[in-house]
Image 1 (cartoon, rainbow, N blue to C red):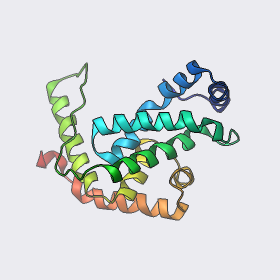
Image 2 (image 1 turned 60 degrees about the vertical axis):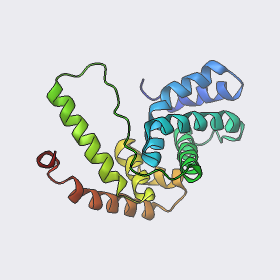
Image 3 (image 1 turned 90 degrees about the vertical axis):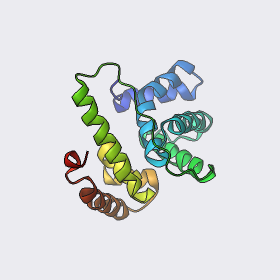
Amino acid sequence: MPDPSPEDEGAIVSRARAGDRDAFGELVDRYQDAVRRVARAVLHDADEADDAAQDAFLSVLVKLAQYDSARPFRPWLMRIAANVAIDRKRRRQVRQGQPLAPEAHSHEPSPLLHAERTALRERLEEALGHLPERYRVALVLYDVEGYSHPEIAEILRIPVGTVRSAVFHARRTLRPLLDGWREGS
């Protein structure tokens, strides 16, 4: 489902703030995939990311009255999602070497394409695991979610220059790790 225009988003958020459960459900439907991606970038575990996404939306529901309607909703939501995932990561017991569960696809064009996608996803997840958390989150917000550097700075509450640096260093670190990924798979 495409993101709402700012006017649509504002109307939906206003209805949700007034207690309209259907409006809050619309917000969840529109943003759940993005929230999961941000959580997964922090947690590296699909199940934990789903739990973190639920926690983030619960937190949003509780804090909705505090939301400043003069500002865009999505960055506010993403900041909450990132914070929830980071808090969850800090609280969980250290578990190393646990691979991410492969995502089920209901319609793959071919087994070869599926194998290539799986190999790329595994290689990318492994490479992302070598990045410090601040680089990984900034890179996912920029390259996957499409946020601008100033928006990421607002979401993560860090200077814009720090965001630019994190994305640059993340890419520079990933480049040799992903170089020739097909030959290595």
